[in-house]
Image (cartoon, rainbow, N blue to C red; front, side, top):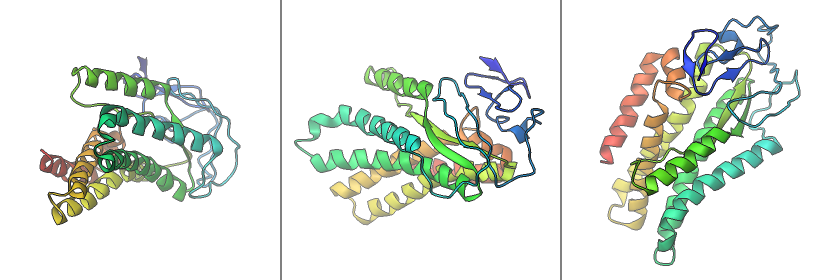
Length: 265
């Protein structure tokens, strides 16, 4: 593990600052959060300066500087990483239930679609929230995340773990942000999962004891668990940034997501 140069907290996934060269925890990864002394200019809130970055084995990338980010814009590299991440997300559950495909193809397709939407909409919510305020934001595959995903799948298949950790990558964000903006970007992902869970809940109550109703119940479960998992106020999780920004927002999100989890038990 590496100690954060700002607060001294040890982290498995340190972030290296492109300006001062220091290593920081998730809370202090952005230049304005660790009092960067490496020439970072905080006077240009709508211009994103991005160079090569490294995050515990993540892909390296060079990006043009001094440009305003267009909302809802995707690079070819990001589309490739999203496609690979989505392939991982849909392949793993399909491997577990593929034998049912000839008997209940609608069920299998429904499960895979619900998982895909839970993952993709969560990541896109982060991306679009950041881009709307002029940040550079792109999804990137994580080597460590992919390894954790495949390892947890193997352990769950062996009945060692009750749940599987699915984290093939994350949205990388860079730019001049204050804590409020950082928190709002972070809450966007879990909020999207909570919204999906509520929609599925309405469907499940409207048409119970049907295939679609069963799938809707599964959608509630997946999105509720994904939301509550990401709201953990620790390390690289969204919950840490939300908690540091506004504890009331964090509590409200946890209560809603927790209630949805309890409904699925």
